[in-house]
Amino acid sequence: MDSHGQDGRRVGWAVVDTDIGPLLLAATREGLVNVVFHATDEVRDGALGRLASRLGTEPAEEPGSPLLAEAIRQVEAYFAGERRDFDLPLDWSLVSGFHREVLGELATPRADRPGGGVGPPAPRGGRPAGGPGGARLGRAPGPAPPPVHRPSAAGRCAGRGTRPFPSPGSAG
Image (cartoon, rainbow, N blue to C red):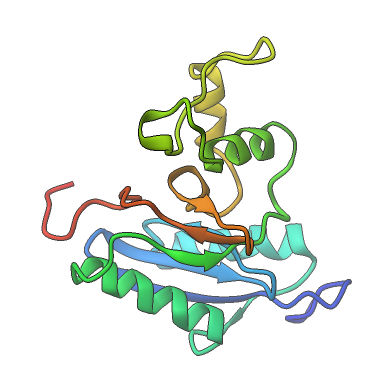
């Protein structure tokens, strides 16, 4: 297996040191495909192995690739207190079924939410707004930003001042 999958998909990755520990960022040409917190060597290697298996390609370390370099720049700016939100394209290819439905719903701005923001919707279609669904989402394989950011018309992730990470300088 090399860094190009069966469909020619290339997966690059980088680890960035942050105030909350190492963060693994993985991306395809389509966008950020995976974010892993506490990315120690062991955690990183396990995550990269799962990505290789799921995407059919061996991820290659590419911190200088345009998308990863921009993601690293935005994460570093966030922890420096210079940024409050993220604007990155996302690759949703690892998210399907229930996870995709719920993450898509959470990422969609709605007028019935405070400030028209994102967050849990009222129960719809016989599914609860929280509870077991929330526990299942904690194991979602996709990128981390969707629950706290909304996609723009251009398919990019645009924040609204919510914080996916602790505030710079905060205890948690």
